[in-house]
Amino acid sequence: MRGERNRKENDMNIGEACVIFHDIDSDKYTVDEKGLAIKLILDMETHNSVTKEMLIKALRWLWNEHFEWEGEK
Image (tube, rainbow, N blue to C red; front, side, top):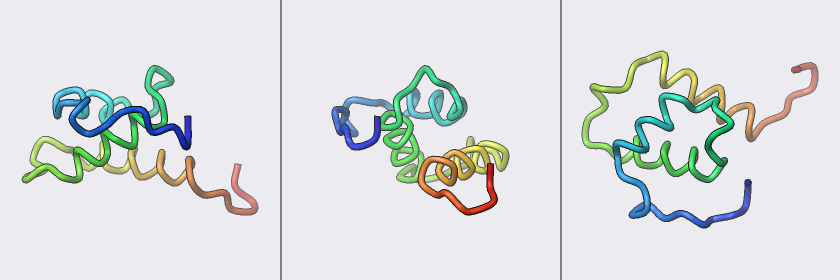
């Protein structure tokens, strides 16, 4: 849920962050968990394990979560 900050970076490991990031559209995870996963992925030293498709999915999720433009579904 937006606004609830109940998880901290040290509550999630990079493996869990990768799983959530890969499945960013899933309802199994809260908005905060998804945001934290994205933050941990952004902070990784390298991004060799992150595909272009995964990045696009995360960008679409962020866009749909935070922006609403007239004429869009």
